Image (cartoon, rainbow, N blue to C red; front, side, top):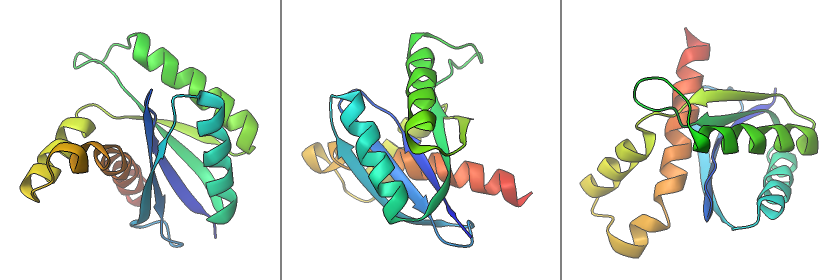
Length: 138
């Protein structure tokens, strides 16, 4: 069985969450600090191999009315490049409000300042992956 990886793509940091082997819960998270898309993709491909990942889920930032803006287009381009580099199927997943929820979760656990800045993307990736895993479990 292969794991599923959730990705919250960002300009400066990309959050990554990897499922457990049964693909029922989030098993681990990390943040890839990179302003270079090619380097971020190379790091994700390496993590895919290390974690025996079989599928990728990339967050798609839609507007609250469901439309897609320029940020969504960047994420779609990133996902296409990642799919080609990793040779794995990529599913886009609506990530509306995941960053807001991630900030709320971190506030509840006293993560503030730099500590929060370094963690919020991994938490957002976890929320993307949790949503997708819940969808698969239905």
